[in-house]
Image (cartoon, rainbow, N blue to C red; front, side, top):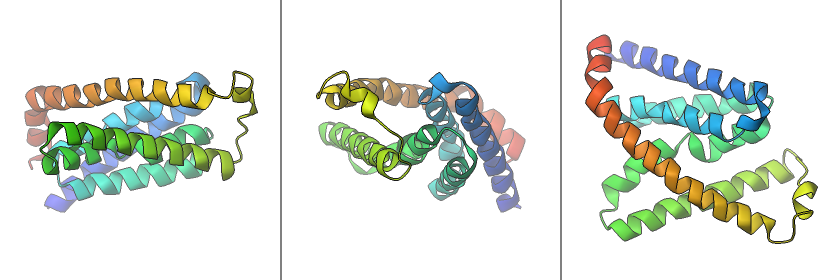
Length: 179
């Protein structure tokens, strides 16, 4: 019976995540906000069930997004970072107790993920980036630096929403699904 409840919760989170990912096709300037928000929905499963269930949901949403979402950049950003970050954050926090090393590792994960994601966008999906060359040769480094600043805020949001979820919603979800 427990797996039925986990499947139901996973189906709800997956459906909501894919629904939000569709918004990136409808509202073009939401290319990064929508996958970030869809990734935040995984906080529910990360906190309620085993991490492997959250990984299954992440994988399902990533595959569905890459297949059916028109905005491939948004789908790649979900698949390469925003979708798994709430999961990997828990793993890093549990295993790396040294605070400085923990922060360095999270930044390393972010930077490698974003660079690999954009390499996929440029070379596999052939999305042109010639427009960025108009702003100068350091545009990519500037945007990566800006992404790192934004990552700090996203990490704070993930941490704070996890705290809020555990204080306000954990008991309600547990009561509804009777875990």
